[in-house]
Image 1 (cartoon, rainbow, N blue to C red):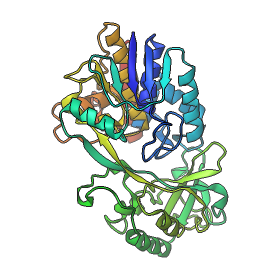
Image 2: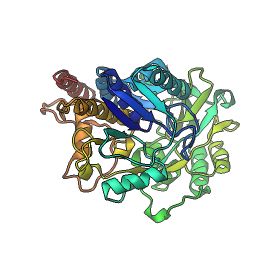
Image 3: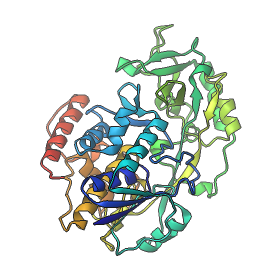
Length: 432
């Protein structure tokens, strides 16, 4: 009983773990370090390219609910994330290098998983296979995927935020706080006056961007990773309601909320690196240094990693996939991860979990597990495979797609916690 998995990112590793834990012999193919995508540089598996945050951890947050569902199904990704977490208020953020290394160690140590470091250019439709190559699929395999799907691939552009050293941050200006005082004060906050914000804004919208190998007019940018310079073009105050929102972050020096605030989140366990929250960007590296150093507290910042923008590819899943992530036309071939149109680290790992579980069941001659849309796992599946979804776009986990019996609960936090309680109860009734 064998399974081939192509791609050892979040989805591929989770799929491999789920299958291996159920007694399946897994051949896990990863092209690194033989070949790297434009956004990858670490030879370990499960490299986090963009943020180091896996988003909210509470049950009043849809991604928090999805993580809890995955914990209850023995998720490798969430377990490793919990073990390598760094302080981030109510969010689950990780030391990205330690996280990737821990996942790699556990994958390599599993007796049922064979890791093969080489690119794959051909998919055998008669062989049980999970394609989890991510949004930066190698060109050769992209052509093979196009051959299988018989359709043009869809795409959008994604971006990553810069990282600076803690010691280069001006602590005489910044202050520690969590928004509205929730959780521990783990974020470093850079306050901006109106004059400082106006000067920064003008520099940002006029800064030079890195060239893209696409017609700029046709670029589709995913809202969840909108480059800060593109967001700023929507209006002078847009950033003050987005990544520079000051609400709930009063400056202890004045007791008042600044005009705008940039938050910095710890990027490693030691707390020596911090990333600029919400500052995904495609500015040229020199421009990032010049413009972002205008933010109070970052005037002498040492940028150890600059932001980048890259093309993300995904297939038209509603027309191609069944509810277990297998292909309609080729039922032995499964897809998982961002290439399916789920958006986000946790969502990608969740799809890998579902694909791994169901590929295993098919190999054993069993029926696939049907996850109900009343749990977050099932709601994502329904969205990704909904035949009526004619204008398919990538989707994060959110309460809007979860089905539940409506009762009137005015308080939003209580309403979301109630939905989560129903979701976890529904999950208990599934045999996985």
